[in-house]
Amino acid sequence: MRIATALVLLASGVVSVATAYASGDADLDALTLADTANSTVSKPSHWRGAFELAAAHYGVARQSREKTGNDTVRAGASISYDGALGSGWHAVFSNRIDMGWRGTASTIDTWKEGYVSWQPAQSIVVDAGRVNLREGVSSGFNPTDFFKANVLRSIVSIDPASLRENRLGTVMLRAQMLWAGGSLNALVSPRLADGASGAALSPDLGATNRQWRYMIGGTQRLFEGFAPQWLVYGGAGTSPQIGVNATALLDDATVAFVEYAGGRGQALADEPRAGERFHSRLSTGVTRTFPGKVSVTLEYDYDGLSADRSTWHALGSDPARYGAYREAVGRTQELTTRQSLFAYVTWEDAIVRHLDATAMGRYDLVDHSAFTWLEARYHWSRTDLAVQWQTDYSGPHTVYGAAEQAELLQAIVTFYF
View (cartoon, rainbow, N blue to C red):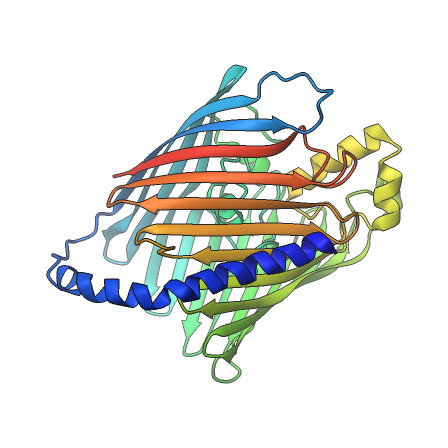
């Protein structure tokens, strides 16, 4: 538990330093108030774009490994459109392409979204096309994010926000009805292809639409500040799953959240003949906002589809089964083992204005391995400069110690237009 304690102490340290600078930030806010008040508000464009350049160095996890391919450079470009087509009609499009070199060159395209919306009445919206549907209220693990499997074509950051944003959407037809204090929505996603494609510029419909699926969701405010969301999900080859998302304001600065999903299914480590059993997935925790623009999230995650302690140890003695299991975990974005702790800390305007700091870590409660991820990002009006540092801890046969690299240091510059 020493690493878990270190994560908590890290979060506490960031809060303490930020609080010390809070009074200084107030003075700086006053100095820039006139500039903010006199700024000209321009009409936002429906188009958004970004171009990104990055260089990274990977530290080898074990000295016995050959030290080749430990550096990489990459470039990425994204473009999106979000605007009205006419009375009652709206269009959304988003795409990202990544080009990288690590020993050999590679290119991969991710078509994130492309759909049209029709609003025949004030309280009814119908969407048709490719939608990046992101359910869930937690930060590190989302049990109710039922459309997260097979959607990652290129991973540019392990930040959960980046993983949920830079992924394939799913082709679907969705309808939503709204009323005061609640909503009801339903969607159906058709089968369009047999399997995923490795082609660089493929829309990869087989990754997201290899079977037909449905989901029904509803939200109703029960009392002030509490409006849980209920979900039912299923489809061809998938038993019905239930999901619940809820948040509650504990005080002016603290929000508690809980996210649950359950249903019959096959555990990732089970043999095909094992059959289906009922499994639960849970994520719960709190987010606290402190003076100095610091936000801290502490989260407990449980995944009944993943390996428990005995299964995880058994996998270590079966290399073929272990490799298949790790591949399934990456594809479905489930947890590698049954239980873990997650911490996420953000600090806006850290020490100096326009500099944001982020700290993230996960501690595995099954094999006691861990990772930490730190980022410092400075913002200009149309440019970001970021430095990221990721470190894995523990032995070679653990969740995070099994990686070929024990450390990643990456510098990124992003231009927005």
